[in-house]
Image (cartoon, rainbow, N blue to C red; front, side):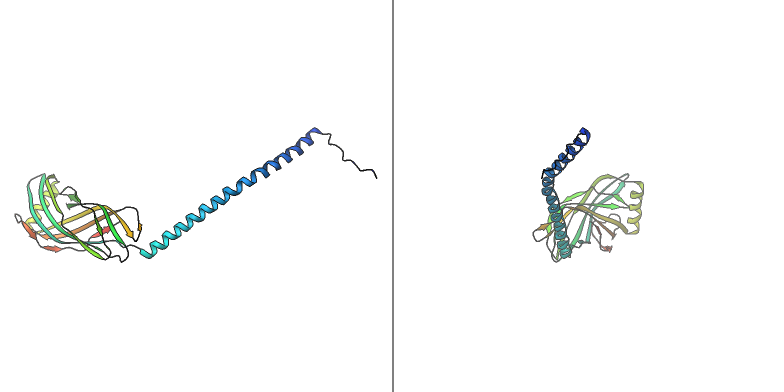
Length: 224
């Protein structure tokens, strides 16, 4: 029996469309193998990031560092001159005790500065304190001497200090600023800013020099 032959496509437009479809299929089949490695790589990176985030979350939940505590336990006024407004000269020393309450995490103070303010105005320039390493569940005492020579102040500050000295009670604020890192085992965090604000009341009469009594020294406010 004679084999029936398929009629040849005589329409050039239809023949071109079929050839275009075949070429498109071949192109898609050629590009498809290249997409698999990219997709697999993206999936692998996503899973790796999720696992890393989960590991960090687990470690953080285990260690969970608490903020250090600061308290001013002593103060001495070596010099305080308010007789040349609008300038003020002073020299004060404070005993600041800080406590690391963490059992698993130590604290690394990379940078720390301190100054004294009165009525929200600095009366000493910032003094740089040496960096130190704060062990777990330990207490460290600092003794910064804060000196200001001819510091320009407002009339409110100079008059307020004269009035408070006459009354015998002066309210001061010891401020510490810096950067710290947490360290738990072999893990170190990035640097965090720390702001410590210690509001104290000292018994001070005009002309007195030396150790002054602390009439009020609650625990300092610590922001990280």
